[in-house]
Amino acid sequence: MIWFFVALGCALLTARFGVWQLSRAHTKLAYEAQVAERSVMPPLPAGDLARDAAAAEAQWQRHIALTGEWDSAHTVFLMNRTMDERSGFYVMTPLRLPEGGAVVVQRGWIARDDGDPMKAPAVPMPTGSVKVYGHVAAWPSHWIDIGHGPGGPVRQNLEFAAFATESGLALRPETVVEDATADNAGDGLRRDWPTTVGGVSVTTNYGYAVQWFAMSIAFLGLYVWLQFIRPRRLARARSDSPLDDRVDELPPP
Image 1 (cartoon, rainbow, N blue to C red):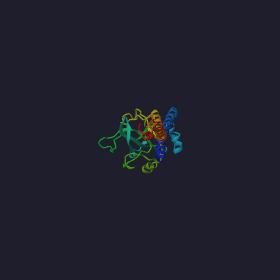
Image 2: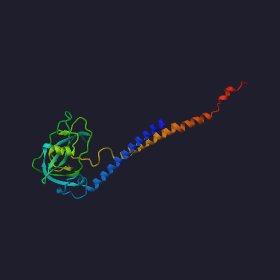
Image 3: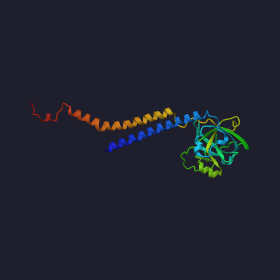
Image 4: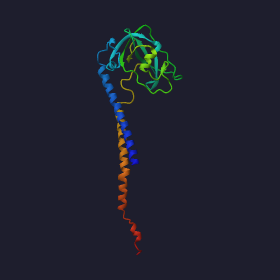
């Protein structure tokens, strides 16, 4: 019974990993479908930018053009973001809107200083009224944070409620991912934004799922083989052996 529960536990664990890989693949397919559907829709009017989370989700991936002023004092550099396998920062700056409130703009990516990874890079910050072209996106997902803390210009995560309190701004519950244009071409930021959910490809997720499910079946198959099939074969082999223990009891010729 002990080996049965060990095999069952291993099978269930590996099967769970397989289901997780399938879930990752389905999430990426849904995201790609959403991008394909909403990217061809007419641009979202600036005045319609959502003010609550439910309305914001319905606007993700919609193109938008905004006019406002940068709030450079509250620029945040999200660390450990990669581009072309190089580590750097996502530059996040609130844009104050004419009608009131602000929206955080994901302005672009910039490489870090390898000699001092926690050093905030210098980024040009235009003053006065600016125009931002991009698409609406979700608030950045939470990453595991070990020892960096929530404050300062360089940080691992940017939490919506905490940042709204910290900045004193009436933030919209979404962000805008800025596109590359002629106006921002000289600011040193890269805007080669990923078009899919980060990580491996959907095909790779399916491949991993098959491997995990195969391992699950292998654990159960190995248990059945070692506990039932192999002992019966050994018993049958012994019973079919031409040698008989009674041979030693026969008298010598």
